[in-house]
Image (cartoon, rainbow, N blue to C red; front, side):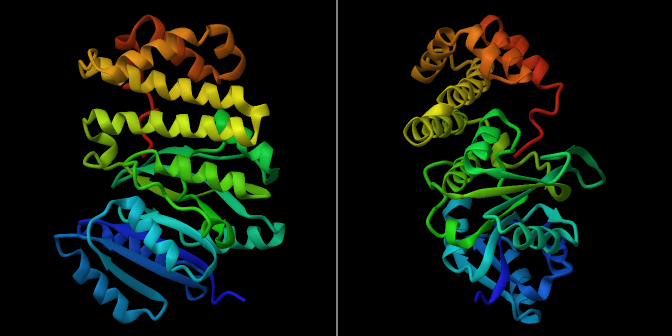
Length: 325
């Protein structure tokens, strides 16, 4: 029998300005005493570690792990190695969760005997929730193939923090430290391949804070290509393990390629090999396939990427597409 119901893994780097709000939201959980709180300090150079040590003194179920800076994926992997809970989840130190989050999700996990429970999320600023994303309108149990299909077409979001995972699955997988962005997407996909069932609930508990200084806002070609490389990995794994869903994985890859291709165009990186490869991949992917295997939003993105990357970027900047970490 597990010592804790859920292990909550929080990773933080230089988070002194927002760490208290995050930690307090976890401490205020209705099932807090049944939770293991693991906070991995990823080489912070500000007052983060001192703040964490003060919290650690007050709570026996909180463990602080201090490591040299190695990135969020490495920090999460350290947390997984130290997790003792039946289920595992993740929190970024600038985010927060509603107080009944883990009790409700854990209850559904036990009642449905499922491997993963997924809820929705808010996109939030300091003052308000600016976007609410529900993963489903009603509770529903998904088989592995159905869950992977929903993931590939975008019905299941790519985040990990609004989900809880059976530890027996998570301990066999690790976040890929080669990627600075899109690591959540790859990790989630690999857990879906390992899971027998996934349970979706309409509740929304998790608040993603929009931080303009985050990695996702970094103007870096290498980071932009991480998403494409992750999508390619997902496509390759789908071909081998669930070949019937290959066309949908290919559509996900092209959707990611469209976004990155247009970003590179706006940053005037048109002479790079990456840009040329993406342009050729998009050119060879037909609108007929897009109409069959893509959502309406992604089909429009494909069409715009083919005719005008500039127009794509202009429209994208005026939507909520960018309001996701």
